Amino acid sequence: MLEKGGPRMFCNITGRNAVGVLDRNKSALTATWPLPAGDTQNVAMALDEANHRLFVVTRKPGKLIVLNSDSGKVIADLPAVGFC
Image (cartoon, rainbow, N blue to C red; front, side, top):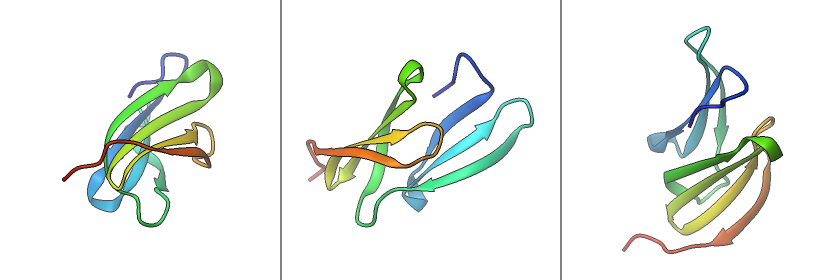
C-alpha cells in the first residue's frame, strides 16, 4: 500500500503477524507494527491517507483492524469473515 503524499509503503508481514513500514526513498524497513495478540494471517490492507488510518484484515480470527498510520496504534477492531 503506497502513500501518495510521502515516501512510505505499508506491507503485510504475514509470517510475523505484523505490518511493515518501508521508506521508498531509503529502500529501508523503518518500523514493524505487530498485530494484537491472537490476530493472525493478515491478508488485505487499505489506506485512508487523509485520516491517517490503515485498515488490515486478518483471517484467523476474521477481523478488520484499524491502525493509526503514523504510530501503528490500534484504533478499532471489528469481526469479519474468517478462513475455514
